[in-house]
Length: 111
Image (cartoon, helix red, strand yellow):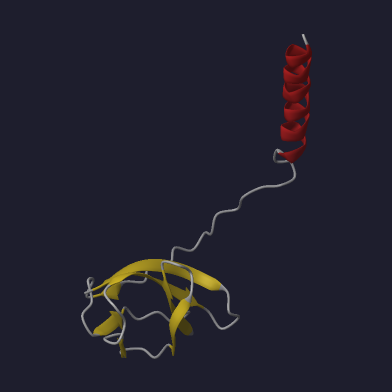
């Protein structure tokens, strides 16, 4: 009897907590109307990373899969970026604009 009462109480409070944490009608996701097309090449990369030209990009950051920043570059059109000193593995390449707002993130494999 005591276990049943505890179980009912648990489900009652769980339902109330879920109802309070659900999205409200005023909270809306507005997708970006502008598609950002940035390509990294070659992928997998050996020593130098190339990036397609984009006028919005100002900063390039490379993160390990553990989340730590391992490299940072200021973007210049037509430049190749040296990543030959990074260990083999998977990395995330994050592109930011002049306001330090993240534009997009791409996956890079280092051989």
